[in-house]
Amino acid sequence: MSKRLQVLLEEKEWAEIQRAARARRITIAEWVRQALRTARRHQPQRDAEKKLKAVRAATRHSFPTGDIEQMLAEIEQGYLDNRR
Image (cartoon, rainbow, N blue to C red; front, side):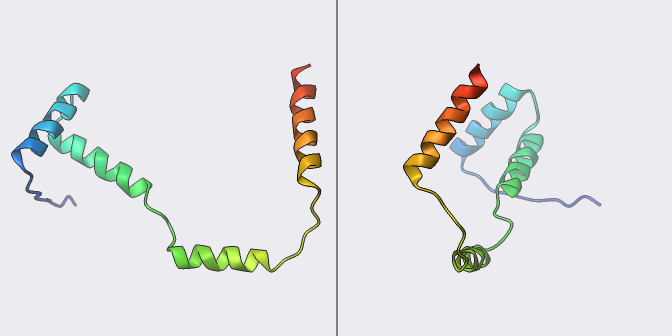
């Protein structure tokens, strides 16, 4: 079932949206639907506190690591080897 949404805009903003919709050859309504879908996709899926908890939990572990300069050199060497 479809739902109706009413949004009030200043004339200048309406004109800008109208120009953007015309440039894409779509209606203003379709332009708004697409903009809302895009905004929804870019919303964080989890709240910040959950992400921080996961990072804090991960930092309690100890994993072997190498010297940063050595790792960077090995990465660079891998790039060079793949070019040949």
